[in-house]
Structures are given as C-alpha cells and as structure tokens.
Amino acid sequence: MAPKKFNYFSLFFLTLVALLIAQSTTVEARKFIGVNQFCTTASHKKLCTKMVNGATNMHDATQNAILETLGLAKKIQSMSHLIEPAIANLEPVSQESIRSTCKDNFDNIVDDLETSLQALKDNDQGTLLTYLSASASTDCGDALQEFSVDNPLSKVTGHLAKEVDNCLAVVQQI
Image 1 (cartoon, rainbow, N blue to C red):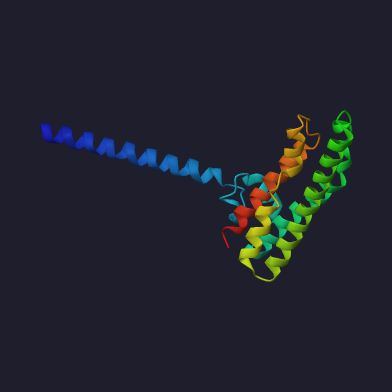
Image 2 (image 1 turned 120 degrees about the vertical axis):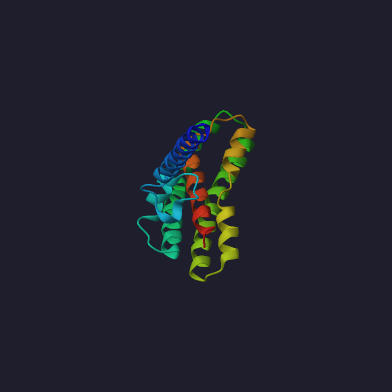
C-alpha cells in the first residue's frame, strides 16, 4: 500500500513542477509580446521597437534605430540655447566654457551618429560600434553638473541616452 501512495505523491509532484515551469515560460514569453525581434536584448524594449520601425532585417533595424536617434540628436543640437538661462548667474568665463562644451558635445554626437550610419553602409562593424559608443557622450551634462547648474535639457538628453543604448543593443546582434 505504501508504494501506491508514494506513486500518487510522485505523480502529483511532477505535475506541479511541470505546471510551474510552463507558467514561468509563459511569463517570460509575455515579456516579449509586441517587441521587435531585434530589440529583445535592449534595455528599453518598447522604445527600441518604435525606433526600428517594423524592420524585418538586421541592417534595416540598425539603420532605422540610428536615424531615429540622429533625429533626436539634431533636435537637442537646436535646443542648446535653452542652457543660457541656467548659466546666467555664472561668471562670463564659466558661461563661455559651458556654452562651448555643450555646443561641441551636441555637434560631436550628431557627427558620431552620421559616421555610424556611414559605417553601417560600408559594413564596418568596428567603426560602427566605436562611433555609436562615442555618441553616448554626456560632456554637456557633466559640465553643468560641475558648476552645480540644473540641466534644462536633462529629460531630452536622458531620452537620447536610452536611444543610443538601444542602438547599441540592436547592433550587438549583427
């Protein structure tokens, strides 16, 4: 009689384990519902999916993501004047230093993303990764922080950092 009870217990235990495994697999699968196949390793999956814009191959996904990021970088570049009120109370030499740092930073980010696009077209993975990584520069924010100035562009530059991060995630799959 004892072996029969043991068999029922074993069967019940195996069924319970199988159900738990199936449920955890379903939960994991739900995480990726609606996420583009090239964005599964991205830190910001929903944003990445929007950025790759329905791409069905790696090249197009990478290009779309970089183009989206480049558009935002150009927008930030045109918004650089918004730091002026934030630095108005600093010494003129400090104002000029921050102004110059921010302009150079935003110009370099745009240049780095444009170089990344060219590297993608040239199928140059090393250059692509190098310049995409460089576009994650935060020199302007660092300069403002050094002078204890609140960054009026922090929200949009934070979004840019997420987009660059997503670009790198997509490229890493190539």
